[in-house]
Length: 500
Figure (spheres, rainbow, N blue to C red):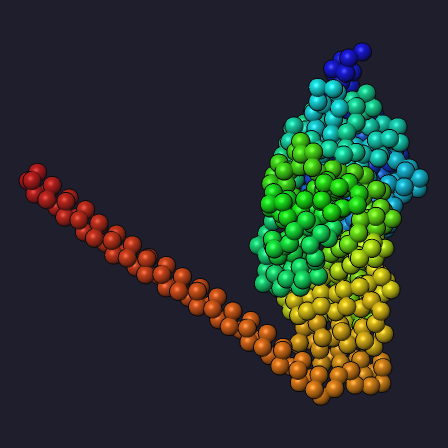
């Protein structure tokens, strides 16, 4: 039978496809830019026809309808990466959270969670009958190998990608054609703090290095600082729009990589149309399952591997907290430890933990004497190499615990350093810095504070000038309008005279 006939035979409506899902089933879905929202909407609309269905998924860029109160007893979310729409439900115990290193998630899903049904999103089939998983290969493609029922939303907006990202139509149970734009992670303006962090991170990157970059402000700030580099490689679990200019300019050309030379390797694309258009039908970009991309042993095969990850909190011993805030689940471990260890194992490799020095609009220090009670350590202190804030770089590998603490105090926000110094004295029974070190330290901070003050004043002056210009323009507009009204009245008066 030709593939076109197979495809047509399996093509049904979403309402028809979901009849293959039974009460009590475990259902794993794609995530991020590849979440099959069209099929999920059909499930939500028919929620009262199901009982005790477990939805297994990672980070969603949309809503989490499974967390709504009326879904209780019908659907329950088992989340592998908390997001804004389900954190509250997880915190209140209404939804479940399963923790795992990202590279182990395919194994966790197949051998521990054991879903019966897989819901995915794919591109339309090509002339040979193969669909592509496009933006999200990660764990998603693997579920279609071991789940009994595989339902795919076919979406013309899904890009076709190369690598281990295709599957023939005969290997699916049902297809549902629903075309809708993919959810996007658009680039936002890079803050001054993020730009400073990006500069420090970029100073640790050398020509020919192979990079892991995540998504968000700091990775984009790092990308913005790399245009003076050459022959960079890219092997990353996720990437956003920030890498596209570097790829287009040939800054990232992958010519020095030991594996997949000449190819960018990622597990998922988390960007906008800018990124999706770049990876579409691009043989220089390969998407692979996450148990390959994030496997530390595979990562380490590339020399000079540099991983850059962010976090929520670092204590004076170098313990990194990235996915919890106290007892609340904020995100997940993701691939941080995968790449920290892969980079450490790499010949010439370096791992970087980058973060702003404060949170909550400067009221909370991210560098703390002790991690917040209830928080889980994401990356153990023994794995941490570089920590970067907008105030500099702390190199921790090979340092004593005292040296680590001092290095971290030096890159903490100035407002919180006195408290950290007090805690250092309490812990280690000695002064952390000599008078000369403190004086030098203070002078540098004063200089930076002065630079930032001048920058703020300059921005305020620019804003004031803009406000003055707008005020003047409005005044001119009013005067012009008054003249127009006067002329209009005069014209009417003259017309009445002529009529009389």
